[in-house]
Structure formats: structure tokens, C-alpha cells
Length: 134
Image: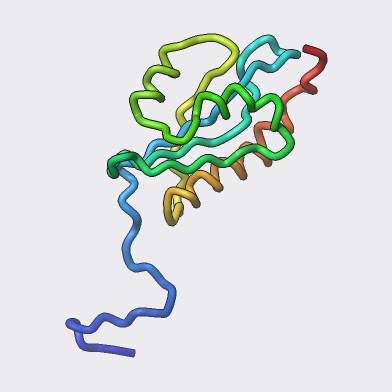
């Protein structure tokens, strides 16, 4: 172990600093849930790092929702800007998005999106009723 204050002891793979999450924004992308009659069915997690230009983007899709998620796939396209998100927040209809909290312990933007998706899969989606007929 190093005792010299100018040469800190660093364990391989261990990070001594937390990531700067101040520019991270996360949203849960929702579509219309036929049984509930509201856009509350989560199909993806969108994460943006607005500290970069263009913003870094991560999308994590809920498994087995390919067809219901089509409206979001069309909206997202190749790039997503913070201005796009502001526009979508102002719109109402069959799609919606809900801001998500940055999970504690997120190592990077991708990990943050993965943690939010894990929570959706474990807690939110199982609590929703069956989709039913459209």
C-alpha cells in the first residue's frame, strides 16, 4: 500500500470519482395501454447526456414490445435532441414520456439506462394489467 500522499493507492478497476451526472436526462417512453385507455405502457428508456453536442444518446428497449414501440422508433430516428424531448413533453396522444430519476450508483449513461430498465421490468411492467384487445 502506498503511504505517499502524492501517489494515491489505486486498486485496479476501482473508480475514485463519481461520474458527472448533472447533464444526464432520463425518460421512460410510454405507449397507449388498450386495457387502461392511457399512454402508460413502458416500451423503452431514453437517456441523453446534454453535456455533449450533439447529445450522447442511449435507448434501452423493453423486450418483446417491438410492434407497440413502433411509434417511438419512428420518433427517435437517428438522433435525438433535447429540443425533441421538449416537443414530445408538450404533446399528448398515444405516446408519452415520463422523466426518470438517475439511479444511485450509475457508472455511466448506459448503466443508468440499464438500471431504469431493470426497475421497469421488475416492478412496473408486472403490475400492469394484460394489454387486452386494441
